[in-house]
Amino acid sequence: MPRPISIVPSVLPADFSRLGDECMNLEKAGVDRIQFDVMDGVFVPNLTFGPDVIASVRPHVEVPFEAHLMVVEPDRLLERYVEAGCGIVIVHAEACTHLHRTLARIGDLGATPGLALNPHTPAEVVSQVCDLVGLVLVMTVNPGFGGQEYIATMEPKIAEVAAIVDGRDCDVEVDGGIGPATVAGAAAAGANVLVSGSALYRDPEGLDHAVADLRARAESASH
Ligand code: DX5
Figure 1 (cartoon, rainbow, N blue to C red):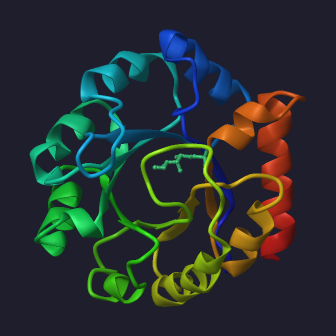
Figure 2 (figure 1 turned 90 degrees about the horizontal axis):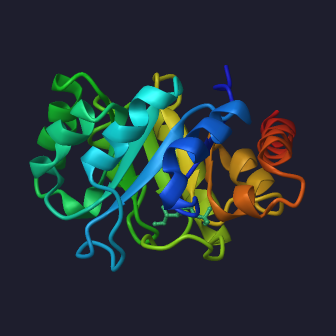
């Protein structure tokens, strides 16, 4: 049974001076949840949201939040992002010395554990922790910045991950360069959660159209 398609905006391209309004607009546009790209300036060159920023937005929208932790030693921060209101916490395999323990801890904190794989990391990593995760994020760019080009050679890895988690209560998510021209390839390969930042904000017909268009393209490609 294919898992439902979800469209998840990254708020990286949003106007940070109006982040609350931006999240309300995304909710009105029909997104399934909102992703905060958390960057520490070490694991990736960029620096973004602390937990207090996310907590300040939390009361203004109903949709679930996910924290994509592009940080070193994420164990230090798990509790704070869960307390800030993130129901899903995604850590990078490459940033975790004891990945199995970190994922289990996210579950113990009451959040859904997510595992992100950078482009160079093989899908095989998932098979060792697939009983612990509710989401596997296959990065289709090298993390750190929005607006990068989709890496189409990740599509076989998306299919590999989908096969590993098949039959489990686990989403296959992709993030990076997802837009009208690339979403079908990712969905056809097996992704059911599509994260998009710049393409959503770039749509001349606005967010409502952008979300509906991505969803329609993904749904028709995934059947
Ligand atoms: C990379 C970020 C981006 C962002 C979406 O570290 O994770 O992938 O979410 O970026 P776009 O959709 O603009 O490529």
